[in-house]
Length: 72
Image 1 (tube, rainbow, N blue to C red):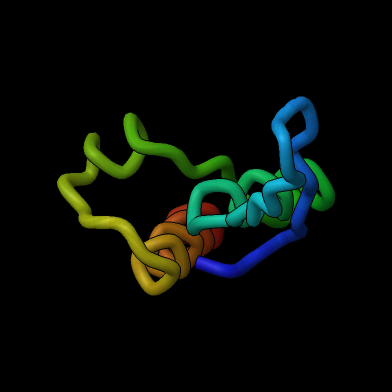
Image 2: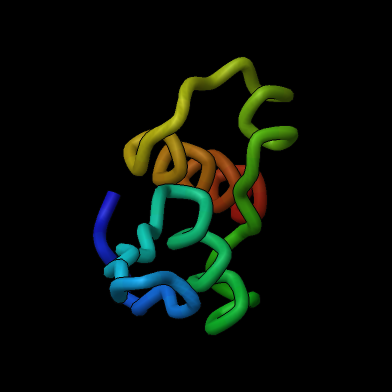
């Protein structure tokens, strides 16, 4: 996971900094939105349908399998 940004939470007696975190699914969704003809969507239902755990290496495997299927 990577920090994607930080925001201040107002409305309290002191400002609280909150980190905005991008995990594997969020990163894959951003790539899908940016290049939908290249990257596939990725979320829990898709991952669980394949019986896979999370992580970027598993997403890359999904991309490889999809490319192999499309070029066969």
